[in-house]
Amino acid sequence: MRIAWIGKKTPFCGNVTYSREITNSLLDRGHDVSFLHFAQEESHADNWPNCQEFPLPFIYKSQVYTIPTFKATKVLTESLRRIQPDIVHASLTLSPIDFILPEICEELNLPLVATFHTPFTGKGAKLVSGTQYLAYQLYAPSLGHYHRVIVFSQIQRELLVRLGVPLKKISVIPNGVDVVKYSPGASKIKTEFQAERLFVYQGRIAPEKNVESLLRAWRQSEMRPDTKLLIVGNGPLKSALEPFYNAEHGVIWLGFIADENRRIEILRGSDVFILPSLVEGLSLSLLEAMACGLACLATDVGADGEVLEDGAGIVINTKSVRSQLRTLLPLFQDHREIATLLGHKARQRVLERYTLSNNITQVEMLYQEVLGHKSIPLTKGA
Image (tube, rainbow, N blue to C red):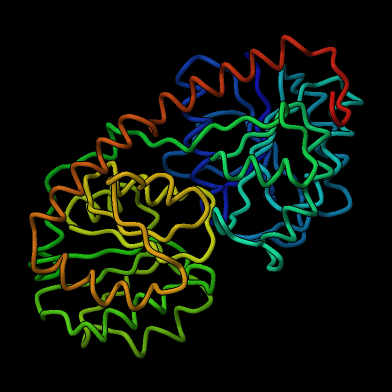
């Protein structure tokens, strides 16, 4: 099958990881994949698929959104004409291109699938305000013009349906992780950081990730000197937080780590993974930590609570993150058996529900379903 994939390659974020893992896996299964992304020229990086690239011009891009040039629409259209794909799959990048893509594909008579990544709070939330909910309101009318929209959980599906996206157009296909690559194994990380117990956070250092609540709880818990907290990632709050929570308190800032093998070594050598976010989609970092056999603590936002439910991890209420962590951090420090048991359960949960192999199989089945209805116009409700 010839697939035109529209996604992100930089800067690093969950959307980037998603595009890399899915396109690599599709290539491994024998599909012909072309990668269209916002770049000034073709670029190649470690672990990225070796496939034909089509750069799209842009004015500005960040981890959150992208502003294309006026020429980008024409370049995209001409690229799709050149590729002549069987299907187009857009990993939506919070770009104006997302809203005109259905019109372009309808003109070219190309089936169109989207993956909608935008994070959300969680079940039971009123969602009456906030930029994430506004994004859902903004996108809902346009998503109805895609042949299919992939989301990560039933909660996300229900939210889009309430906003007017036809139920039959929404497919729930959770994120998946390579359970061979991300697996328990040997690591020298504890020796490197002279630690007996290691806790880790991996993600953006931004307000919605709520890292400060974790850091405040860590400092107030007065953890032992041989227990360390590794912070992996960069973001706008890093420079403001790092001076107040540092090596004196057992906090080690590692910044963004591009080397995937290094990130895996950190996970394999750690005991507990913590994700205190206020909003999420379905965190790939969480799934990677679970696959490596870490005990996981995460807030009940997006689909993360669903991933950890029924004993696969500890689900934290967003209204009391700091107070709950003040209790949980010393508990996991002093009782290894709890972390070991939860780490085993986390790994089993990923094997049962969140493998990359199963994810790709579901994506392939969705493509076949859409191609079977290729003559259906890209109109809402069709």
